[in-house]
View 1 (cartoon, one colour):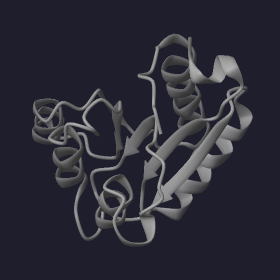
View 2: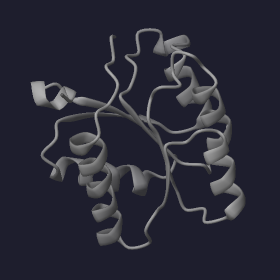
View 3: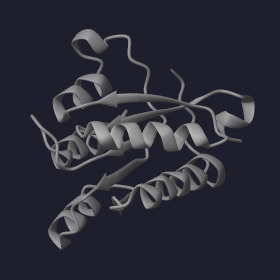
View 4: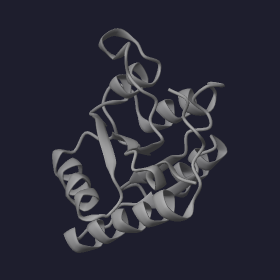
Length: 150
């Protein structure tokens, strides 16, 4: 049974520095029927601080799902993914790469670092919204997420 089956919002950490993509993701999730709480980290260091509960994020609650861009300031998405998947507490959080990069090297590196899937951001607004909707349908309705005890 998913968290949402009980009316609890699914916590999503969006690691994205592009304000337009943040806004599009927020809008696409609002259109869905699944309750969610979107937390945004605008660079790799902020994402790591949030996940490791450092500094101002000491009281942060573990997300149920991470949407991770690769092209980030301070620490890139590969570095963030390595922290997530090498940490015994964080490694079970499904991490979806959502990036504009189409390079074989990026795709291979993220799967080698145990990303759960790799999605190339669509170029058009309509396709971006459809893609977020498909992510929502698959990860929030079809897939059973691990229980978060925080």
